[in-house]
Image (cartoon, rainbow, N blue to C red; front, side, top):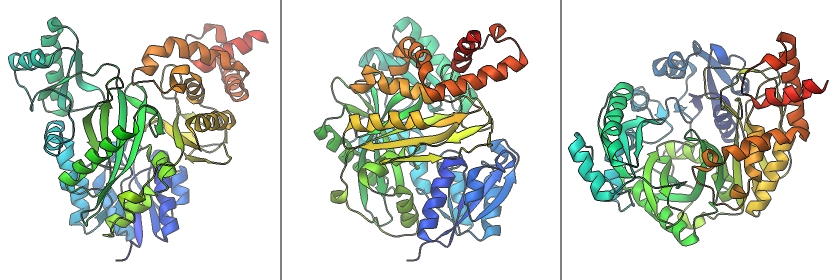
Length: 500
C-alpha cells in the first residue's frame, strides 16, 4: 500500500517542523499553514508549500478547520497531520477530513470520543482491567450523594468536572466543612467553562508522580507499548521537564503498566500514537489511570531516543494502512533521555514574554537533539503557547543525561526575550531532582529554594548576557531602580547597573 503523496501539517512551530522533516525523509511533499503572526515562522520556510489561513488568533486560523480543509483540497494534499494541540483531538475536524476523502493522521473518531469524557474513559479502563483511582461510579448530581462517596473513600478527595481541563472545574477537599462549597464551585465552573455541570469524586493521592505510557496501534489489530515517561516536574499543571525511563518505577511495575496500557488500547481498538497517563503513588508503587491523550505528545522525542522508534514516521505508515513495523519484543529501552521545554517566559513569574529574538545559538554536540523554531530576528508572537524549543539529551546513565543537559543549556544563547533556561539549570542541580524522588509538587514545595539559586547564577555567561541586555533596555526607558517588576533578568540587571 502506497504512502501519501502530500501531507498538510495543521499546526505551527517546532512540531510542524518535526513533521515536515519526517515527510521529507519519506519522500512526501509537505504543506505548511500559517496565520498573520506566523508569516516569518521557520515552519513556513522549511515546508515545500505554505498557505495563509487567517488572522493571528488561533480560533481564526489554526482552529479554523474549514479553512484548513480548503487549503488541503487546494494544495492536493491527501492527508492531514494535526500534530498536538489545536485540532489534534477534535472529532469535528477528524470527521470533516473523512468526509472530504482526506486521511486524518491520528486515531479514529470513535477513539477520540471514547477518551474525551473522563467518566466514560474511566469506565472503559475499569472494564479492561486498568487500575483506576477509588471514587464515584460516574457523575454525582447532589451534595448528599457526593458526601456519601467522600465518606466511603475517605479524605482527602478531589472533585472534578467531567469535561474539565486546564485546572478548571477541580477542587481538592481536605476537610468535610469545605466539601459543599467546593462541590458547588466545581459544578459552576463545569457549566461556565465547558457547558457541562457534571462532576465526579476521586480519592486524592498526596504528592504523586505523573507517569505516562506511550502506546501504538494499527488498523490490523496490533497494539504495543513503548515504555514510560516521567512528567512530574510541572508548574501550574504544565510539564516542563520529562525523562525516560522514570527513576522511580521498578522494572516489574513498569512491565505491569505497559501491559495494562496495551489492554486499554485494545479495549477501544486504538489506531495510531496515544498516551495513557497515570497517577503514581511513589510510596506504595501503585498506579491509577488518569486520562488518555489521543495524539502525539510534546515529549515524544525522549521515547524515540531510548527506543529508536521514529513515532511520526510510524504515525504516517499506520494512517496509510500499513501494519506496525515492530512487535512488542522488538522494543527495548536503552540508556536515559531527558527533555527540557524552553519557553519565552519569565522564569520566576512564568509570565509569557513575546518579542524579537536578538541572538540565538542552539546547543550542539553528541547524543542530543534540539527541536526548535527560534532564530535571530524572529518575533515570538503573543497568541500561542510560549514554548519555542525543546532540548533533548541522552546518556548511558541518568546522571550522564543530566550532565549532558546542563552542558547543552549552558551553550544555549537566546537573547532579546526572557526564557526559562536558567530555571531548568537550577532544577537539574537540585538534590531532589538528582535523586529522582521529586513529585508533581516539586516546584511548589521548593520554589523558595529554587528562586534564590537562580539569582546566584550571575556568573553564567548566558545569564549575564541576557541580564545585561535587559538592564540596557530598561536604562534607556527609565531608572532601573524605579522598576517594580518581578523578573529574574531585571533583578540581575539591577545588580549589574548599580555596579556601573
